[in-house]
Image (cartoon, rainbow, N blue to C red):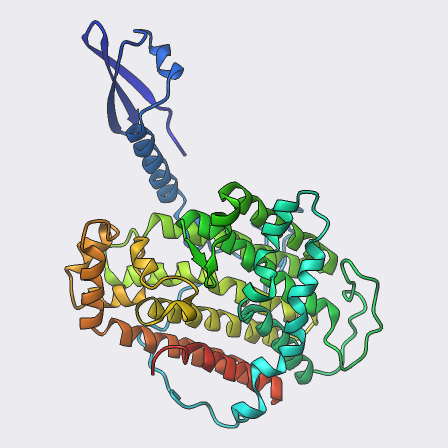
Length: 472
């Protein structure tokens, strides 16, 4: 994958050496004064920062180009007739539904907005926040109890930081899991749960039919733990100062502790997953973590496509990996855990996927239109971080001048301000809202494929609520 580097030495004077590092056909030159004339001397001193950065950029670009299938989407052909290799991570256990991530509905228009599909209960009768409130109220407490026991008090405090009542957020992801588990139960006949109804840290509780199956509640907790771990890591990478309206974890405890706290949360989530004793669920939920890494690499690397549509597809695929995959695979896992039919598993996955994409599109809109209370972070933070989001990408089709700003990641003085002007002078925000509504409606249709129930309709209202966060 990487060719061996070669070094060439040229002498300009007695005490001045000039070095040329050849990496994949690129020459990187630098000099050293008053050092040993031996080539071995190169390894006795630190390389200049400029050289390190050049090599780093070359390595990342080379690896990304050589492994596009891994960063974008690697199709795995299913062969149900052959025996799968035990332990091969590229041999999926759950093979009946592999999403090719090819259709993003860029040319589609919303059908119902601002209304809802027919035969859906009014919001007052199917309020998702009210229906899930009792379970959500105790979720952060349950997670904090699971995280206790760490010998290092600082790490323990950092890991529990976002599970304090004042910083726990709206818990949209576990809310979706909880509501979906109820909707699926209402859509099917009663099913046994003894084989997976095994609590992680507490003694078995007497299970009653009206109670949410404990294993599915555990799945809701796992989804929130994984999400929180990703926030810890993202804020370090992005050097973010705030999260959910509070100081980011790394600004209080330091980057090293924040990274370790995120790792610790992922480890605890892995233990919880193992206790569910369902290989397909373990695979689906573990895939979320892989996707988080893929999405972050895609964000760091940026789009390699020259065409505007290619940039949009790259952006949407990145959003799936970073945001929607967690919702999609958590929903899919809820259905798998309940041994529901494949069409219900697919509907669950599609609901989570499209809600997740709509959710991120709305976040991108709020980066321009929202305030700190809506975002939990300063406005225009994406632009200031050099990220080209949907409003900018759509605006670039009307103002090609944006391309130059996007290519240099809005780093020069006045770039952010100019980009904001272009976005507001274009249809960028309107088109982003329309795309968010399309994906929200696709989520609604996936939910409506289930049998009618108050929880199904709550999922419909939740998808609508995700998009209605924007200004109408």
